[in-house]
Image (cartoon, rainbow, N blue to C red; front, top):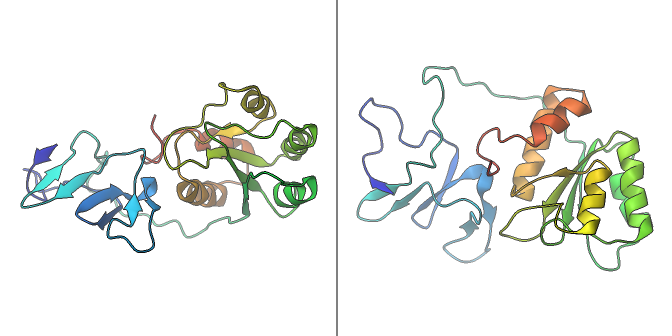
Length: 210
């Protein structure tokens, strides 16, 4: 951490990112999640430390802050989003009918699978059959963890490995909120699902640890 002014010696913003400032902490926006409806520390960034912390002076976590390649580049706002994304929270007692309606709906282009722990899921045949069915339909399937902290590793358990073989992508340590926004943006930029899949696993703006 470094104590410094809001701008560096060249006059550039010291934190040129989209952030959330709450309870004296500056958090990277795409790594944050709402943690409490009542507490002052309402937001958390479990997998990425604060970019800055405010006290009598501001301490910047300079090694984490992302800087633009070109400081004079014009702001570009993407207004075309593709929101055909569903979210399936894997849970005990889930039925094949419910899962199929969420994952395989013809109007759904992508589905975020919120799985257990490091990317584990039910080992029932019907579960994997529906995943394969969706993959064969060309759906974009992204595996994120339900845990607040940690990362998806589909090589740890047999079911995770089977999901991987069925074409499910690892969301690494991305939050569900960031995964949703990333899919909206990528799908809005390109109609080719394979391109979207390739870009999903890349760290584009600090949303995953890679």
